[in-house]
Image 1 (cartoon, one colour):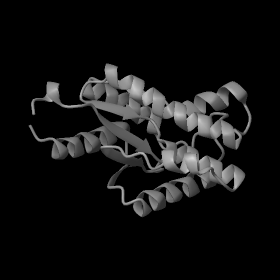
Image 2: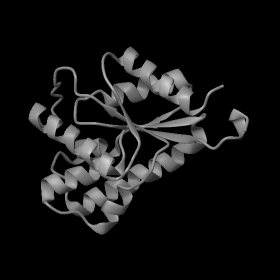
Image 3: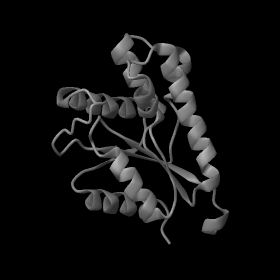
Image 4: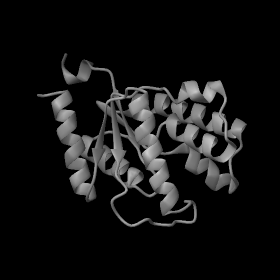
Length: 177
């Protein structure tokens, strides 16, 4: 099928806090000539400046999905997603010890390519993040969950340019010219 006739595919970026997801999302969108969807949970946290409750986290996951669905109309070939509802589930379980079935269902959302950013550079505290230990645990939990969900995922590491090249190579393998 010619590229113009293909549906937009979704590329999800995962990983712990301060692992380069947002920087990579911007860079990939530029490289692919498409758009990216920011992490709504971070935006909501910045608005409230408090730990989000269970109900709020369900709303965050729903809004993240809605933002992705809305962005499809502006995307070209690929839509780059700077998180998934799986991350929201992780925060809910970590902060509240439980999660509603609705959030767990949203967390099973599938993407055409899932990329896990390695935490292979110094932790950057921006006033929003927890700490490097949490980042490491979050990374390990993400990998464990993706594996348990039988999601085929790839890991990226190194400089932003190296990460972009790794993802573009994977995309080429998925869709050779």
